Amino acid sequence: MLRRRLPLLLVFALLFGATPAAAQSVASVVDQMRAQYERQLDAVDTYIVETTLYTSYNKKVMRDGSPTYESQTRMKGQSSNAFASSTTPTTVYGLQFDRLKEHATYQGTETVNGVRTHVLHVDDPSAVNPDVSTNDAESMTYYIDAERSVPTRILMKPEGQGAQGPQASSVTINMKDYRTTDGLTLPYRMEFQIDMNMSEAQRKQMEKAMKQMENMPEAQRKQMESMMGSQMEMMKQMMSGEPMIVEVQRVQVNTELPDGMFN
Image 1 (tube, helix red, strand yellow):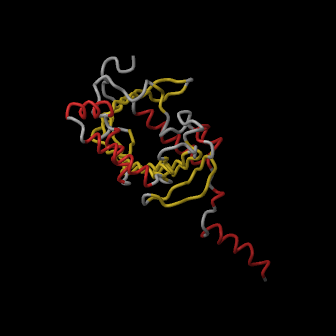
Image 2: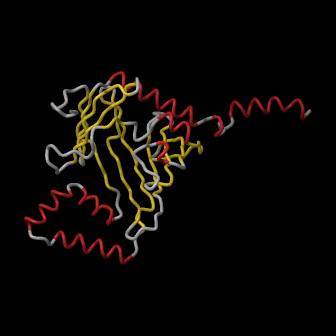
Image 3: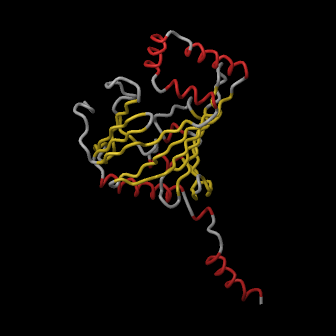
């Protein structure tokens, strides 16, 4: 009797049972992300994103026989010709698909920011993102929206170097409110949460330094604020323990970029 029931039990398990984690893989999650990104490449040649912290200028270029985007970023509060970095090809949120396939492990699903996500973990972040050195982080975890195939959270565990001074114990980036404009899909709200390993003495030292800057003569303080730009607000945000929030204010797709932007 039991032998007759076994095939039926297997059928019901397949039809109604929960999908096991093994049914999903890093390769399938990454392939879905790549497909979403390639659809964007087909529709978008240039775009400008203005946020509360920076403005980025992006154009489609060919790199190693494949299309990608080159980006220039200008921080708010800095001079019109000051950029955060030199012109470099961008990857999708710091991800290189082939490297992610090779080095990530699949750790099942988790609900993050109200959506079901696939969890991809990387023990060596520098192997996936060339902009991250082995001294910057000891691990990265990516939470990929299972429906939209876009990152909804990135968690970085910095490398414990034993250096003096405050050290971040974790950096969490939450990406929310995704919207699509003329084929370009972006999170319109990003929350950066930096958890600090800071002794009471270190915290008081940072508070004292910031108080000294606030009490500087006006001309000197303005010069310091001009030099530091948005970093001043970032320091204040870190001290408060609250996340730093970056919101998109304006998006222009397939628009003309300023002359000389990428020369």
